[in-house]
Image (cartoon, rainbow, N blue to C red; front, top):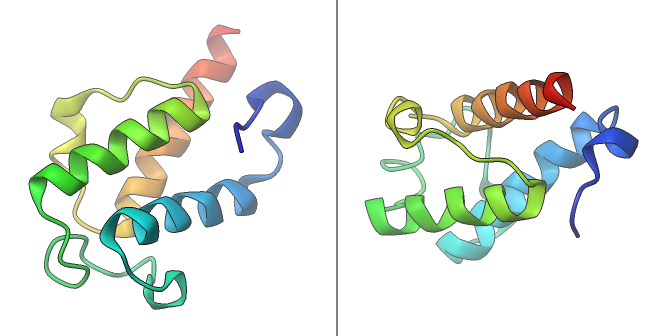
Length: 95
């Protein structure tokens, strides 16, 4: 499902669920086990390669480009969601 930001920007809960689903698919785990407070590396077992896959999948699905330097600051699932929301807002403001 590709998210059209202009049309669906108000659907933030769905975007957050989509991010969790992407993490679950790449980490090969049940999406119900992914909590926003979970540490992506320690709690979910996501290594650096899988983390890059997650970022690439999010970028492709949402049509954004995330600065990799900022991605290094991501620790929890919530951090990732906040970063994605920042870039969605940036894209929306540039449209």
